Image (cartoon, rainbow, N blue to C red; front, side, top):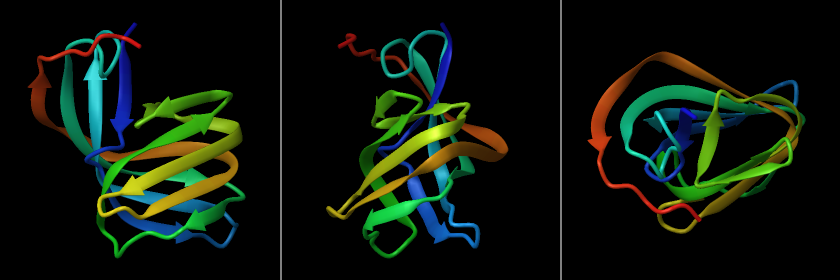
Length: 138
């Protein structure tokens, strides 16, 4: 089972914008991308950076961000009945309930809840390093 995720911790939120249609666009610049032939953050993986946008439709924002761009300390993505702690799946394009919780370095937190979520990556990913250490599941 190969997998690819955005690792929220260490990613940078470049901007968070409410768009005219009521959706919210979180621009990552860059996001930390973990790619694995097994399970990301468990099996040996590679770390990449890539810019992109996470768009949540009909969104409501709770909390505030610090001055952007800002480094993320963690968070979670909940969609299609699944909750991804400290990560967001790639690919992501779902029509149902979606909630992104992000914690910024320095303590600020924000929750974006809406209907439908999609991730649009930009350009080519840039290789950072190989991750030798693995964590036991659970």
